[in-house]
Image (cartoon, rainbow, N blue to C red):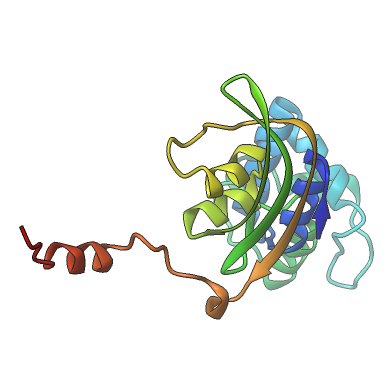
Length: 197
């Protein structure tokens, strides 16, 4: 996927990743408490109204849905039924994902201008983002993350573009990942080399 601004870069990283949604009552209640503060009960009840049904499959009333979130019912005094768990999973699908599971990595093909030591410099490169960096890029993609793949030392050298740029972002499978040239095994082999004096 091609990106030429930060929003497109975020969209591409997320589109190439697998969203993991909230499924349990505890996860969803915690989300609403963080998102809505003291008004969380009203917000979750409103969102559950078109999902929650009684045993006969009829929509539940506002007061019946609200009972689910009173006192001990919220904090595990009663384990949700299989039907209630299915309703929470459905609500979780409607909420933002709790995180994105990246592919094995991302291939970044960059062409554009970046700010280096107060100078706007042209750069073109192809690099991979793997491991923890891929997870971070999938969940909170930043321009600096992409630049750190290329400018490995010092990290965070470039955190913003200074001119036009394009970035092609593709998902990598396990077989597509290229091992880092400075792996520990390479360093160990170099230590065994005897130099002629």
